[in-house]
Image 1 (cartoon, rainbow, N blue to C red):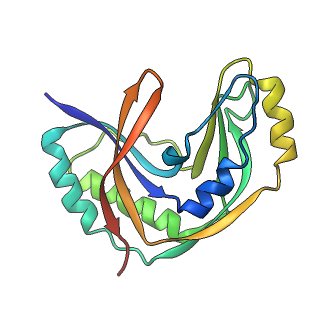
Image 2: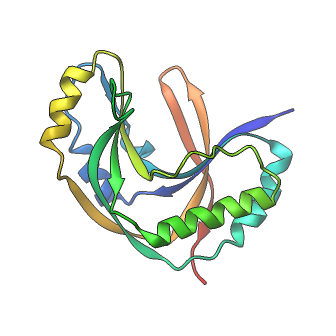
Length: 183
């Protein structure tokens, strides 16, 4: 059975990506996300059988949410209480339309028969970097220095279905289809 590793994401406009790329500085044990790979994940779908992709896209095309402005602010790391593995940029607090979009996307993929979803709470973020165990000494001061970082807000007018192909140099993401927002 052929499968594709899929996720749903918000693409970042070029001015936002450029602002985020400017945050990258050489830090031991830190691999910064390539500019073209920067995005905000709405939902990771995992390995989806090829025959399930069309029913999923049909359900996603029916998702209706008004376009909205999304503020990006605040940096942090996962896991929060031990050596960082991911450095991230967060979303302005309590953004209702983003959470509404996530809920409707979840409803759509569940209705399409994809039931093995990760049920952890939604912590919207942009992955800025991945870290090795050597990174903690450099990342902690970087996080302190950029604590109040705010990126330009951007208009969310669509969400994307993307494929992620794992390669030795890291994952390569490809947009398969875009779904415009609107009522």
